[in-house]
Image 1 (cartoon, rainbow, N blue to C red):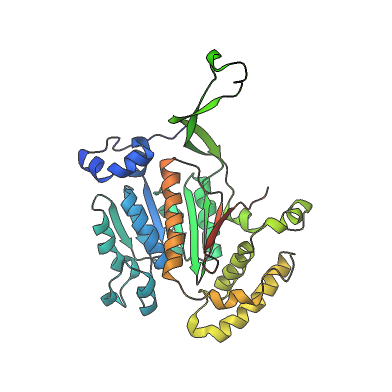
Image 2 (cartoon, rainbow, N blue to C red):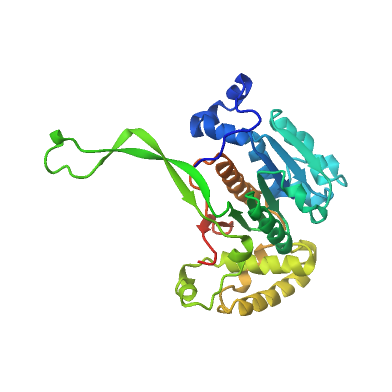
Length: 346
């Protein structure tokens, strides 16, 4: 069954109805009510985080908490449009608050300057969805496992130069509705040859569906030595293995590849690539050296694409309207294309 629409305020005011008129026409009043009753945590206010924040605020969630302990730097100003250029040295979440709130005064936007690593488990339980951007693998796995136990939807994402990704875990049983063309049974007047149902182009019907998701830990720990995994290797995007390399780099260095440390980081990326591919028991030539030159810094166009998809998926999940991505989205700015693929124990 579809979850309850709204516990505290089941009615959308006339002002809200006018504000969200286009969206209500697109995905319906019930979906907008579910959005209006949802509280979201967004961790990481870099370029990607700013895009996601903008999309969620404009969509009309009930509340959005911006969590980031880092300060605004010259580089972050290039890809982060919510912080003024005069805000260098200020906290990124606090500096993003004013412009974020101005996008939609009906959304409760809060800034939290604490380190996400220091937050107790209870902190995350107050939200309906948690979105982690620019976070380490260990932190994402910890938060994902916690939220999975409490039926909280989890989204992760990051941008590395020309590359970006998004992951989502909507739980073992995510219910949603999808609009489909209405099928009309053939009548006797259609003749004896009319055996199949016809599609009525003027009418649609809402179909209830269910999707199942795995944890991030399961998605990143696929056993590539099994026959089934080997058989599917040709169809597996190399972006998945590139992500493994970049997450390992972040774990080892405590940061993403830095343009100011290009020679050192390039050498380390080559070594990590060899170590990761060997540990996964896959071919050593899956990733050539080309990727190294294109995974430094946050690029605004890539942030816009990945942030648009990530924001869209949060909206779809919370509104329970339309089929969500399952469970990875990869974007390659060099090729200008994106791909959705599923990775997990099965």
